[in-house]
Amino acid sequence: MIGIGDAGLLSFLNDRRIMLNAGDIGERIAAVIESRGCFLVDVEVSGDNDVTVTIESSEGTVTMDDCAAVNDFFLSAYDQDTEDYSLTVTSAGLDQPFRIRRQLAKAVGKEVEVRLLDGSRLTGTLTEETDGHISLSIPGGRKKAAETETVPTDEIKDVRYHISI
Image (cartoon, rainbow, N blue to C red):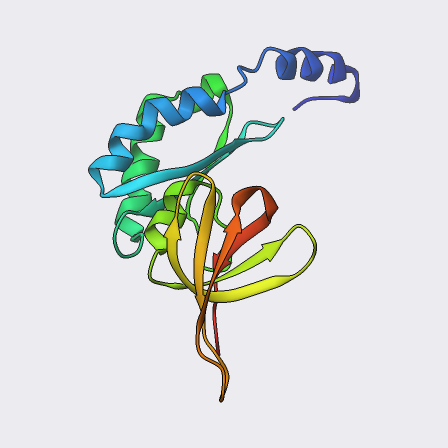
């Protein structure tokens, strides 16, 4: 049992904790993620070594087996007693904004919502994504034909799947 006088010892132990690096983690686990038919979206490491690994399936959806395989590999690659971390492996989620370009490429042909830096929104089918812009097919109304809207990527705040109910 640690008493009040042991606060200095706790501080010393916390200072000696090995902080994990998101870039190193991404490089180390990339092969196992790719072997599952997935790709790495993000690795976040908090100041308390709480690690969140976000993956997405190249085709289809991320399964529990995909997350478990990445989790198991991570646990074998990093000593939890030495690094003192907590780990969460999760899928990107349909309601979350895209974080990397590969997610945009996967979404071509799907309905997305684009929020622009000026506060406006566009909803349509993503028809093209390039290094400098995206294109959407926006449905027309009763008397209006569908139109194509091309948006420079530097004017985009975020893009996510459009979920209609």
